[in-house]
Length: 303
Image (cartoon, rainbow, N blue to C red; front, side, top):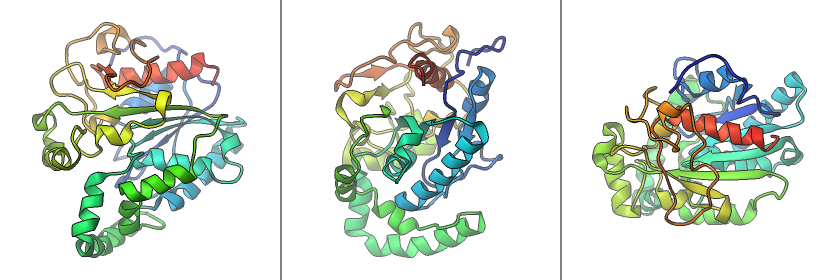
């Protein structure tokens, strides 16, 4: 990520509320979002975290995020917030928008690698290994309750993300005409792109095709023209599910790519104003720079 003197180019009208995905919590030591929040605050943004359960159901997490949203509005005096969500967090946010009074408090929703069409891999697991999923849920729920989850429910959280249940969810939660939506997918180039997602990439590839190690690219292609493209990376390594949140806290490649959000161009806006065609690819050298570009677009839209 490029550095320099402090600017205000990410000073949006409304605060940013970052919503994490499944299996993690908003703890200082975890730093789920890597360098991203600090980079945005350095550029004038107000950044808050969702503070919701790691293994909560969609409905339970939506209710928790709604409480956080109201606290932000009360403390800042802002009328609305901009939601930026990763993985299941994007689905949680869509459920949040459907809660009474919440849609009026959301200016925009940006989702990164969210399984809007469901996970075919989870569908396969529940079809053939449902008893195993149920047994695993007990120790997972206990462990995460000890770590601070209020209502962990591993089994139902995973079951809700199967294609069948997400089809139903999409019918019940259509987009709001008053909110700006932007959806992105991420994709690894091969199993060698990310050793931490190597095994899961192969499993998801076998069942669903192109993916980022957790979520299939097709699952994130949602809502027509509101789908902005696939973050693929400017090098051969691609963008894995955890690269999308700056898990390693370093650029994806040392080579800057002019006009594509490269580390050497200060977070250029190249490729961010795009359509939703099947061939859309967005090359990213440093994921932090791309989040800066995303937030700049919100600022330029008056949000």
